[in-house]
Image (cartoon, rainbow, N blue to C red; front, side, top):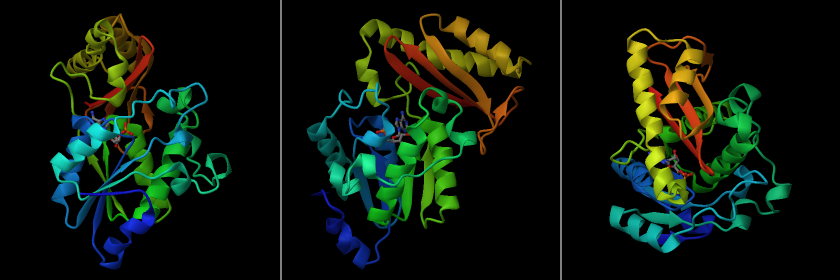
Length: 275
Ligand code: AMP
């Protein structure tokens, strides 16, 4: 396994016209990330994992400094998965003139100011800006993302299509703990009591799906029932969206997606479920 810091070290692959499957991450790798890596390994060519905690996607009061950084363990996991190269760029490798002076991608409000974008208005601009740069620098032919961040996946698909970037974006299902909690690098912030409470979110989504099949399809009703099914959590949002366009629905139907965010103590959980 190659460990590299700069784009130049990826040049050999590009010169040899190898296909490259990129898995962009912020590190603190768990089984959700590993499922993306396993998907990358199914593709022809080389597998490339990037580890970069992107300052541009964190708000001023968010956890950039505290974000878990576990590089040694991450490298071991990548090695065990048979990753061809781990790319750990420095901040100046991605933002040569500094984050503040970087030209960025702006996502239309219709996609970036709904769901997670209500409480994190600059988040998706930051994500698109870094992913754009990772794609251009790596010349990846495929990039693999998790459905855990469903809004992000839809926005990135639109970005590569709008900007005509020659890459295929591939989405992978959510990997969960045995009690259903969606795996996340931030789950390690949870106390054991919070960890217990956190699992109620997915159970409440499953209940909503079941009730939907019994005819409860108004999102306002689903929202208040979901909140009462996870009383220890504070709902940030629950919305039903079109699977391809993220258009918000008042009335849910099969094939839509329920997207949720909720606070569990100081930790914000997100999850989603196809209904
Ligand atoms: P992050 O390191 O949190 O930026 O995530 C890197 C990638 O891993 C993103 O494409 C996420 O959607 C994906 N990911 C994170 N958690 C999970 C999970 N539980 N299941 C599947 N993919 C995930």
